[in-house]
Image 1 (spheres, rainbow, N blue to C red):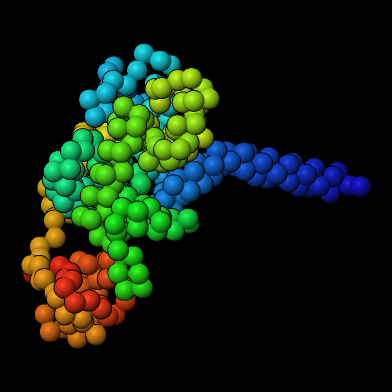
Image 2: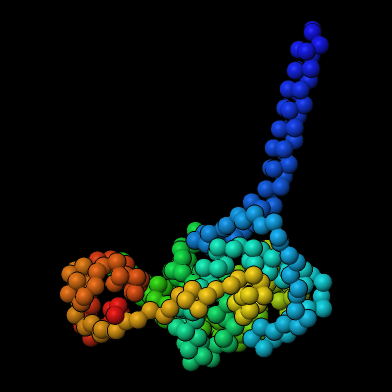
Length: 315
């Protein structure tokens, strides 16, 4: 073989080796990112996982002390600090998703905060709704629905009407009331709001079994499924970011926050055979009617004698 041909062949081999190595490195590098993406999509597939290449990623300083619902978070434990740091870093660098989530708080917190206060639930639980649904009427792979992600059976257990025409899990106010009842029951059972938050994820039965088997009572001492292990730390991370967005790199102008919806409320006592016509007769359209009343699941509404519904009409 001529020297020139030999050099060309060697060069091609070197290029091939380089390309193969680059592909291998890329696959290895993306493995953890894909695992992270799968985890967050499993919690809420409607949250957009945004891969953002940031050349100026900075470390995040953890607080020396932290509370949730007035309960102490043991920040002196290394695994507590590292678990919280993981969720802070992940959520701080989910740039588009976290930015959208923060913008929604100004629309929906004024709705759910008074309900929690009226029902005796600590205000910190609004951050639980953030990680459950990103403050959207999300539907999970297991068919959990709404801001608080109630399954159909659980919703009915807490007196939420669910049928072909109506699903009150999509009613932010009524599902928040149901969530308050659920969490307060868990608190009465376990004596801890933090443990009640964990139970919202894996169920009261799983927490009770863990306490019995592992002989511990604090969430921070329990060995739980991976999703529940991360669950409370995600709540804490969103609490920290929401309370001081700029500290974690999120800067929103005064005009950038989503405004509360403006509407008037009609009390309807007679069946509505055609919601399209009903919407048009009230100065709106079906799209806006269902945006303001997502619990309306069909194009008609049957109302039995003696019953009524409150329907929001956009101003």
